[in-house]
Length: 465
Ligand SMILES: Cc1cc2nc3c(=O)[nH]c(=O)nc-3n(C[C@H](O)[C@H](O)[C@H](O)COP(=O)(O)OP(=O)(O)OC[C@H]3O[C@@H](n4cnc5c(N)ncnc54)[C@H](O)[C@@H]3O)c2cc1C
Image 1 (spheres, rainbow, N blue to C red):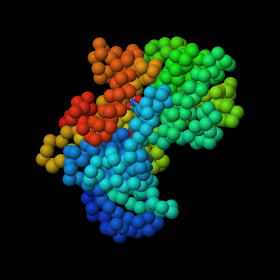
Image 2 (cartoon, rainbow, N blue to C red):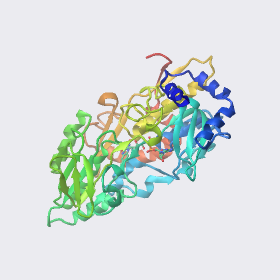
Image 3 (cartoon, protein in one colour):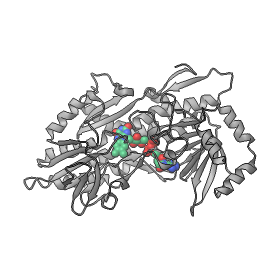
Image 4 (tube, rainbow, N blue to C red):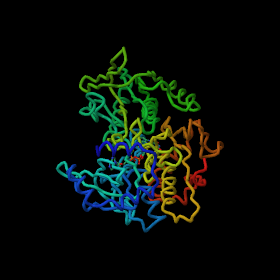
């Protein structure tokens, strides 16, 4: 009966924040203790944070930094199990021998703002009706953490296991992926190996793309373009195949003619509706979910299917697709008013990119801090405009700087005379290769949004639509 009531509560219309806060404060400790005993977790001494942030990735870290700067008195807890943080957008460049892999990672401890408490544990379960999280402890145990406001930002789960035979062969036998830090250098090695076959037998390189949603939907083809450009430069004849589970080369039609031009220039065969389902590394064979079945390869660049992390998709915070159900503009949870989400885990239909997280972080921080403002203040809310970006590395030295918002509407950051959004550009390459990584480490993660006017969100009066 209790469980039934709890699940009803999850589906109930959104409750106002005050009632949530009061409920939490009024709830006697004994009732929590009883509940915890049933689940064999300890909540008796559960710490309470003003804000708990789950995930220390691009979104979570920048939100922590912005909160720290704007509201230094808040008690903020960051729940993040990993001791290392990665700048994933540069892994494409590492695979193209254009970036040093070591420069894409940093110690998590060095990036967490002072006075943000790092809880180096994995979030296991969300219990939003109690303003509570469960954290993984040793020996199958869990503990509880309580919050007044919650920000959910654990990114995406890469489902390597969904492709039979992939995990044991990834990083060898010609099988690689720029989506894995320890494999992206192997991409560059394989490209060099195949370059050396110039004049000999024509080897086959396959680049796969899984069903959407994935992070940086352009990255599977970025790997193809950079590899193909290296083979073109080396005069190596490689049989190139792009196997995508989707129906088209790119989701925003304005970019397709340019990208198609590169596919044609590199002589790539395009196979749509081709989902990779199994890999036999020893035999160098890839199996697709199609009638024509199998392809042999010398190089296979795999992008695995992705989904929301288990703690999200199996929680009351998830929508039917498993992602955190937020209002697309305010990034506030549709049912739990004191819960926000940002980054790849949100249900909003924007491109899942670091560029989107950069724009979302100030929106979440504004809206969360508005909740804490004195009642007399005129309440406003910040609005996310759907921005995402995908700098497509079509050649080593040229990028198509695809930037777009809701419904694929173009949102260029630069005037057309400087960088034309739909055309390959050397300046855009320099921007991706040099400016963006610097910007990420020195402006975005430390929360210096005051010097990034493009990330300032538009603000409206609360309730105005
Ligand atoms: C190959 C590649 C190329 C890309 N190229 C680009 C690009 O050119 N431009 C661009 O804008 N974006 C690009 N991206 C996408 C970009 O990296 C992501 O969109 C961005 O990192 C999302 O930020 P996030 O904070 O949501 O998730 P992440 O940065 O992935 O961080 C999630 C964090 O949550 C933590 N976490 C996970 N589960 C839990 C849990 N249960 N409890 C607590 N913590 C948890 C993880 O350890 C991690 O630190 C690329 C990504 C890849 C892989």
